[in-house]
Length: 329
Image 1 (cartoon, rainbow, N blue to C red):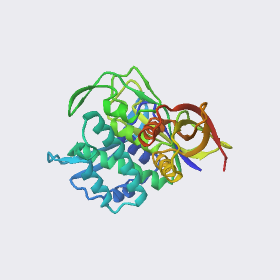
Image 2 (cartoon, rainbow, N blue to C red):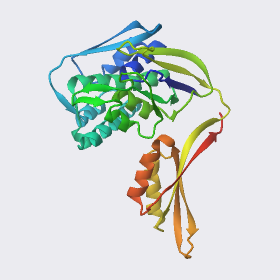
Image 3 (tube, rainbow, N blue to C red):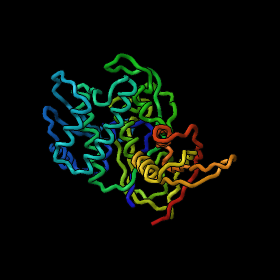
Image 4 (cartoon, rainbow, N blue to C red):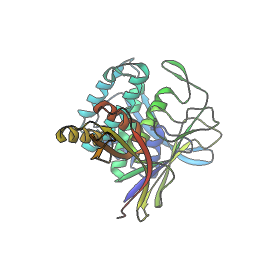
């Protein structure tokens, strides 16, 4: 199985990911040709080799014509859906924008459809996110892993003024994802980078046992006291079986028609659960109830719990994190 690993020792941003993909071997002309399938104009993209802390890396720069327009999430979704891109690229790109828009909506107390992106930021994000989906599609990567993410300290200037690091949107996106604080006064993980890491990565943690075949470095804009790059490693998974940390959530629910319960379990699977089942239990008073069980990635834990409370009458859930080993191929 071909896998990729985001080594985010200096954080992650959309530009870093795109730069790393080019550095690892994605052809620039092919990438640009695919991006031209988007109904977007008034921007140019360039790539060059730079040095960050002694490491050579590829830096992406996107120049746009600022017309002062504001695009909503609905506008951006339409741009992607109406493009001539591969269906899988569309689906992956929209999933990233969905997580970005949902986080912005929650922080700003707005409807998801009303979330807006200033034109320059919107075009940058579209190119970074769609370009990432194109890149991994070209590399034919089956599974992506990601290291825990470092959070810089200090403040960052945004359209809404000065905000603390990590930015509220970034922190919201990374709910349930392993993060840590490092003593660097810079925005190491941007909202776009957080959304890419959250949506594309299947597992967060240490590098899995793999045979590396390609290594690429994507450069950030600023010079830091550490190499400001994202390291991307691709190769073959070599473990006999894959071990990952999963969450096992259980809840007692009212005994309902099995068709209704099947619908609830399908909704949980759609939200990211890898398995769901029920079993009949008898309470101490002799009454029969159903126990709903859900297994899924740890990073989906909060979403799955919210889904249980929203879809059932359960007042409590029991959470047990376990290691799971899958059969090797």
